[in-house]
Length: 265
Length: 265
DNA sequence: GACTGTGAAGACTTTCACAGCA
DNA sequence: TGCTGTGAAAGTCTTCACAGTC
Image (cartoon, rainbow over all chains, first blue to last red; front, side):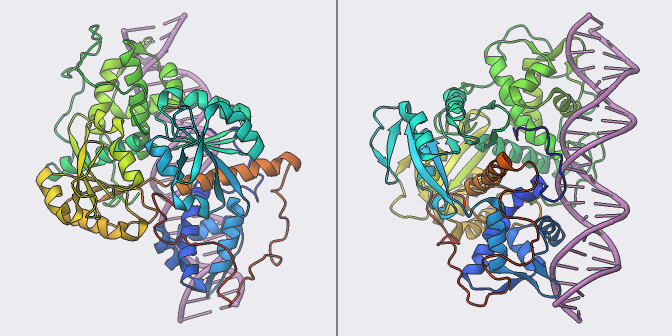
């Protein structure tokens, strides 16, 4: 991720591995479910299964937070919920703005789990004047001219970009200039941000492509036991678009470089 | 990821690292943009910048695919687009079904980039009879009773789950039973699937929580140079929910365990 | 006896840095 | 000369396996 600062010197102690941080929300969700069923304690094995990881990993992860378990017993559910929430910073309120209220932005705005965990939709912002004032998921859409004002007045530090790819970078720049330091990007573009600003991206198309890769693998394996699908040995020659065609048009691909319609690419 | 098969023995050759696979779509997108601008060749440095990675990583990644570059020159854009597309399995058609046509499902259905790269929305499926027949993004919604029939008739191997969390697992089970072997899950639940089925998840709430973690870090660092935010030294005692409360209600959290409204959690 | 916490080993990933080729 | 391809080093993450504690 485009984290700033030259790679955490890890003074030990407060150095929780990124991979662990990424799993804490998973544990938290599983723990929350247990908490609602009033389960008092849980073993690493049970919790790991509920979170979809293995128990050794879970115990290692928790060991970075401290010794919150009891040997021979397991972990106290409520206590762990609190500790992980605190570690993730969910014991405080995080106002969030969503920029780009198309189909996706609207879906995000209406997402219930949003509000549930410390996150609060502070504003919905769109560049289309026709959208201004119209309520989406009960929140009136505001015009992007007011972006800076909204950010600073509400003390927003997290922004969600759900705009077309073509304007994502400029929206990002404005958000950052206005004081946002964490961005969740749904637009199919690489955003560049200054050091100190975190960007995470969610991209449907990328996920599908990764699945397609493995899917293709599976299909190929059905027949041959070793060696890939049906293309073969020596690379060298024999490949459709010549390794130096000047035509500038191979017939592949349609429009995609910019803003499809609603989301990732 | 819940990949089956005990960790690819990597007979060398066809063993592309997972981390590399996950970046191929990024390179492809950047290359596609260059292709549209009719740029004939690109250096690892330029392409890496466009894809948001560093050039050493990109070259290493490409080295797993084969030697597709020219020393002293760079990579032929069209040729690389083709090679990566092929490697990702995008030269073939992948029919996809989307299950759960709420706000999010509708947004996904209308997503343009979907169709652009080998993926085709074969069907939209929802359990609500009121939705049946209604066109969403130009595609008529079909009732979930017909799920199995749709999957097998269209030869669908990739399914997208955009249902509430509460029904995600059973939808998943039906998809798998019907022959789907790759699932993209937008529901905030851990899905369990048999070996050989791939699951990837997209979860807004998790991403936000990860951002909140780093955001909190930043805030803490402003004042103290070392050691975390404001909670401190000795863990041991001094923590709100007692490490063994029997009350079963600490006052935290609202409903969330199940199906919020539209998406991840 | 049951289960956590954690060093140590192993696997994977990234980065370095330079040999090799157009 | 310029830039790729890649061994080797460094860094990160996962898994093992067992000592320690309730």
